[in-house]
Image 1 (tube, rainbow, N blue to C red):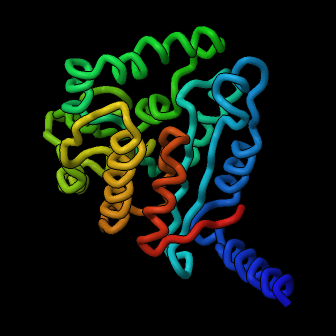
Image 2 (image 1 turned 180 degrees about the vertical axis):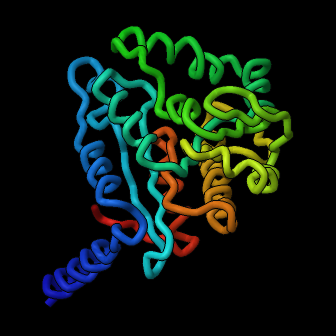
Length: 259
């Protein structure tokens, strides 16, 4: 009887997980490229140093599939094959939300936290050299295409060129500028995930994987609730953030989708 009950629960869970109609929020081409990216595995020293998968992908939707969110987690360090895939993903999603430590927190790290500064600086450069990865992150690729707002900076950029000097310290600041700039976003709209309240940086998980996850999830919800932001966003971040942000979105009426 116990086994039967467990089997019924498993079937119910599977049915719920497969209930998302991805075609309501994404094109066939978008779904196809996500599936291809999800199958890419590292080889050689990359596999040992950075893990088996290049991209961790989670797709979530609201009840009724009115809104979708794609979480694209990566190691930020990739070889040529994965770099090409990152460019294709960026080109196929015009609405992007990008991880990025705000200016004030980056300055704090440089001045007060040598351990975290090393991890974000020379250690990452060394990892690229050791694994023959010189192609940067999908985040940097996205910033070259379309309208971008840097978290905590006064620059609004179009295809990497500064077009406006405006402070954008919160998600609401970004959204307030959108009506006058939205026509410039034909190659994509890059929204910063980490605008908002200053978080005191530390090397422990409460800052890296908890406090920042809360800030990013909150901004995802804020952006999606705004009338000038439409479509399914691809949220580009470090793969370590996927699980935490997905759980936070699930507490805000999102559910995970199988694909």
